[in-house]
Length: 189
Image (cartoon, rainbow, N blue to C red; front, side):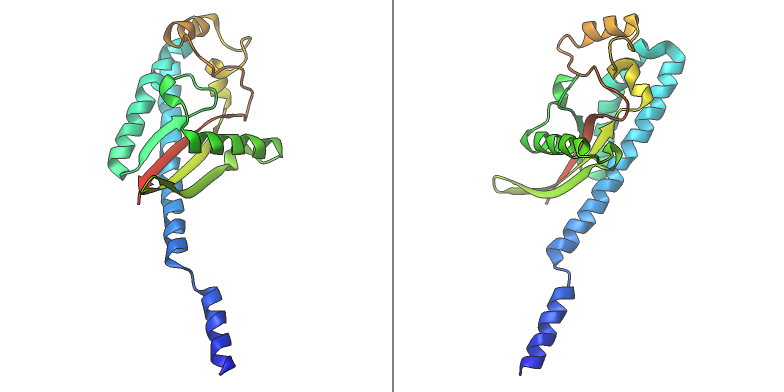
């Protein structure tokens, strides 16, 4: 009688539960969606910089990036936005879960992990609702430092435009490959 029970126990160890399979599927879907926006945003930003300089290109991050996120949200059914611990846009303030993940990303970076590899996916409850949430760190690239770098790196025209558009700006002082923020997405389950 014990042999069939042992066989069932072994089989149970190798069977993936539906919840884990669903979570793995959601993680892959989240990764795929999160990967779509940054390259397109950088392409549009680079084009605008070439046309009118860094100060004029701020409209990309201010207006076009939120519109791109909205369009991608409508196409995919996932809520998509960008957040940061040092936000420039007042709408980019992280909620409690996002703040916790961003702080975790900072700790992991301090421990030696590369910011480009940082991500987190989880099933999260909010009252009686469940969501799948995914975040992917957005490290600074050289291009970013023209508006988010140290004051000596930011042109006077850009500094003036930042003061005009974002009087409460917290998003400066970054160096290369630091976590500027994250793309965050969620989907109701």
